[in-house]
Image (cartoon, rainbow, N blue to C red):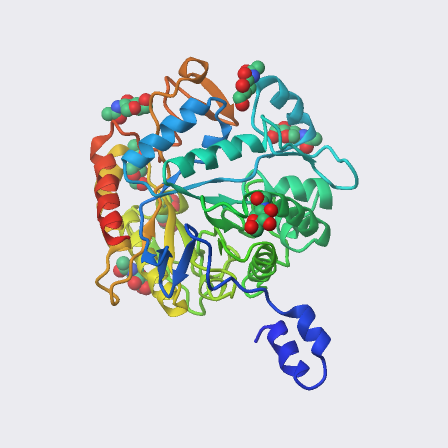
Length: 438
Ligand SMILES: *[C@@H]1O[C@H](CO)[C@@H](O)[C@H](O)[C@H]1NC(C)=O
Ligand SMILES: *[C@@H]1O[C@H](CO)[C@@H](O)[C@H](O)[C@H]1NC(C)=O
Ligand SMILES: *[C@@H]1O[C@H](CO)[C@@H](O)[C@H](O)[C@H]1NC(C)=O
Ligand SMILES: *[C@@H]1O[C@H](CO)[C@@H](O)[C@H](O)[C@H]1NC(C)=O
Ligand SMILES: *[C@@H]1O[C@H](CO)[C@@H](O)[C@H](O)[C@H]1NC(C)=O
Ligand SMILES: *[C@@H]1O[C@H](CO)[C@@H](O)[C@H](O)[C@H]1NC(C)=O
Ligand SMILES: *[C@@H]1O[C@H](CO)[C@@H](O)[C@H](O)[C@H]1NC(C)=O
């Protein structure tokens, strides 16, 4: 039982004030026109089912040319895309700020304190106005946007190092009250900026929250059973809901499970416990999805990079079959929670791998035969755009990401419209999804 529910129960007799103070904020049951909502396992838009193929593009707000942004959204629209997922964060440190000013790099927050641990907020033309422009263009192209507030990778550790100090584990991000206050202050800025916009599909608490990050280890407080992430998801989703009762909220997590009997597989003749099922990563998809202000389940899927050993002789799972199992388990869990589900990131590298593996994954994820017609949605990682013009079509964007000969950043998972076999898998799926909607 949730603490707040217990408090309310007691309050019937003795504690009316405590009850009031701990009441969990609720989503409005009637939302303004054009806002997406849920009905059981389905998304709905203006009272009609809404199922889709979406696009991931974190780099759109990093572009400096509005005509490139518009051209990308136009291509997405032509491909039948209805939902875009992008980053609503771009935090940099004090050293990076100098470079950003020289290179016109988009940034929304810099660790240059105004007062104790308060970020320098950039809502100008090199800052949040670029996110405004992406959201406005999406709206013009009839595309809704999922916005994530921070990142487990290259993002949250800025808060950890700056506010908690060097030597702290990554997971203090989820527990240090000063970090939580700082995160919430940024979240409030973003939510209030777009609170009235029907172009927002949903808010996402964090991209791929885990106990560990790429730069910092997990501490002893983030272990299977500690509920560190679930507690954080609960607190933050309630906080976002208190600011905005109309938009959907989700975790943005990879969707790892914490099972009593986790899946195991054979690798090189050894039985291995699967970290995506044993709670080690930090999430508990079954219970995280049940939280009252988590409106739908989100999960990601990268077995090729998660398990380089899977297709190895002596292992009894392939990348493709591991993915099918992962899809089935999430559909099962979302059905139990009676909430919609988005496979909101997935990918493999290599053109051949994509053309052989994607058809079965997409088929399974969008299959309606298991339940009494439930429509699920997918968002492949990641959208490839050709013909970008800014800086003559060549520009380093951020870290190792670059526009090369007019092509958007290629991380190996990117698929471009000239790769017609892969492209067709998704545009065909989009047609089917769009026919199921409205
Ligand atoms: C920086 O980007 C803005 C668009 O956001 C553009 O108008 C401006 O010309 C760019 N400045 C430089 C120095 O490239
Ligand atoms: C700022 O970030 C850069 C690159 O991401 C890193 O090399 C540098 O050490 C950081 N500086 C501080 C003061 O944290
Ligand atoms: C949002 O809508 C409310 C109610 O119509 C209005 O009071 C408020 O000013 C609007 N806020 C913004 C930022 O447009
Ligand atoms: C692989 O082996 C494990 C352990 O015996 C078993 O639980 C799992 O179902 C097997 N997977 C496949 C795809 O056969
Ligand atoms: C598989 O196990 C054998 C025997 O223990 C070992 O020599 C070999 O290095 C292992 N291969 C891999 C890829 O781990
Ligand atoms: C295709 O997948 C296999 C198995 O993971 C991998 O070894 C190979 O490098 C991939 N091909 C490309 C071009 O990435
Ligand atoms: C498609 O465009 C990408 C990005 O410019 C390029 O790397 C690739 O060679 C092109 N052709 C095919 C068939 O992938």
